[in-house]
Length: 344
Image (cartoon, rainbow, N blue to C red; front, side, top):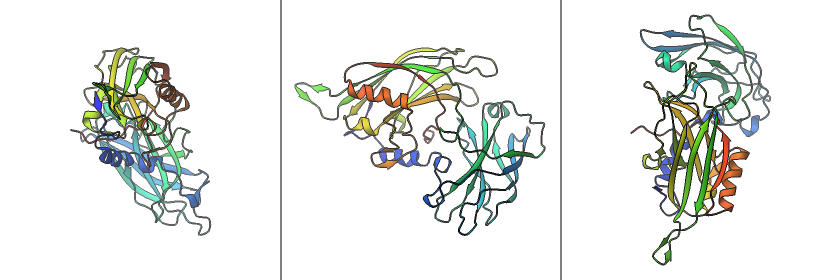
């Protein structure tokens, strides 16, 4: 089991720091002065891949007819950002320079990733346009996405795409990633002799099975599951199941135990469960879910990962309200931006 000391996760400060940096500007909202900016305009870019160098290049040409962010000064200072989803290899974001006071910026800049083609075929490329505010309150102006699994890399022409608003669950589109059957329970206190120890509660997570995991190139995946209880992202706080071979319907029947929980910690913590496809190049994130109260903050700090869906919140609340009982449900897997941790 994994232990939370004194009701707080080990390495909680470093955990918070690493989590707060995850997809920070990707998931940020428009500054309070600039809310309600309508997404409009287009972005022009080309895509190429140099096999010999394993270089993936996005050549950003220009944007046209962007929205005005600051109507008082009729000002927009745009830049373009690229990122890959699910980005299981943590390749990160790339950015162009900022162009000042223009709705029709010309960049002619390359954003480059060094990556194998086989990995690219598992990714979706997102290009998002942002207004750069001098106070750091960047504002979203629109995005487009390219499914690299079906992209013709022989096409090196300049493409023009309309910018679109973000989808309701953040920066990624909803998709069918399968489902997970699981049960959770909370044991409030563990006795030591005749004494009941404070903050000694345990959270038990019983992963039963997954169904309908998506195929890759028509073939079943080699799935396994990872678990972490945020905000702790330390290595010893991470648990995982064994890898099952070539199945879209894996039966794990695996129980994970985390101890050191007071009842108040359940309001601040978030169980992040992610399903992965083991691959010799880079393990690929299939989907996940998050069990929490979905409040958007943890121990007084605003965090992006407290984003549980209504169904996920309902399971967590039922567990909190029914100590000692196993609470079971089947939840859809969704795309989650996992908390980045340093590789060890």
